[in-house]
Amino acid sequence: MLIRYDERGTGLSDWVAEDISFAAMIADLESVVDAAELDRFTLLGVSQSCAVSVAYALRHPERVTGLILYGGFVKGWRKRGDTHEVATHDAMTALIREGWGQNNPVFRHLFTAMFIPGANQVQMDWFDELQRVSVSPCNAGRLHEAFGEIDVSDILSQVMVPTLVLHARNDAAVPFWCGREFATGIP
Image 1: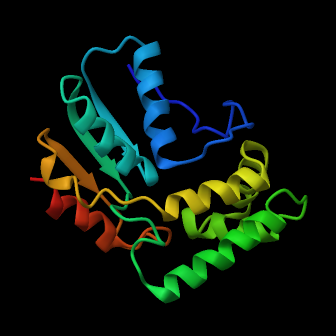
Image 2: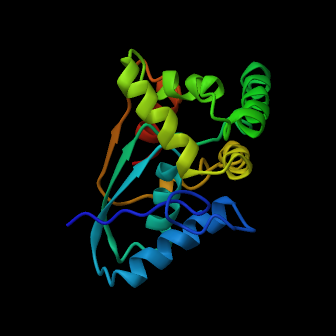
């Protein structure tokens, strides 16, 4: 059985979300697990959800039998301390807030190219539209900012469940070395 959910402020979740923070993301996962009445399960995290999954596994070791972490980062873009990366992401946040909801997908093309490099026109059009209808410009900007503040570096060594870390070498959204941090930081 696979259970998935839309992150707060996105998709079919309520778009009116006062708190879009790392702590709220963990609380949302706790709520989904409780509502689904899951006793023990393997947890899959993708991108920012890798850090959420690690934090959840430490809070609830009795429930998590294993972790699968794909394309994630231990520290968000702001916490990594690279001034070039921070400037780039600050510019991206401005583009998100100004262009995300427009009918013209030019601003969303940047993100489509990062997530689906080499996409054909049909794939680009589909992903551009998915982005537009699945999150408001305001929430997309707020989430992008929140992802920059994530930092689970101080708890990685406490993870004691079997963990599989996967990361594409040429990932344009999250550098490969970010995935390697999970692989080397989790015993």
